[in-house]
Image (tube, rainbow, N blue to C red; front, side):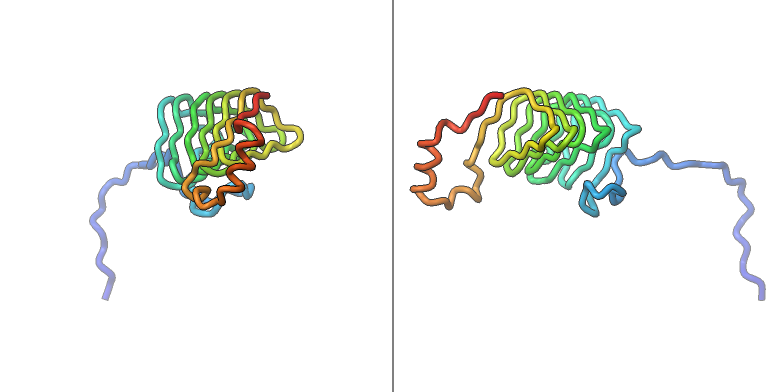
Length: 163
């Protein structure tokens, strides 16, 4: 006959708080689908530790540790933080040291003040960088390189660049 009615209970306008980090796809194409995102209206004072790719467009004071995951800092990002991640892409501003097992990219209009330790580096024309760069090729995937290529690297210098 008629569908059963639910009991008439008052429903308060309850809003769930927005998540600090969401798994939404970035509309600007900077982050991969499925990566977590910290939006431009958010400010974190403390450490961020994660096990997935992360896009930050807000501000962070503390440490960011992603281990084997990628960190992308959007154009509105302002970090005063030390960063540890597999790869780091900077479109915004970072004041702190960056340790990456893979690649550090400082994109046009990106700015980094701090020391970099990475296997590979890319600094685009128009980017700002002040600090030192240490090329660390001791990552596990690099251990299979031949003795001659390691000798050639060794003869090229200590692997540090100061800018």
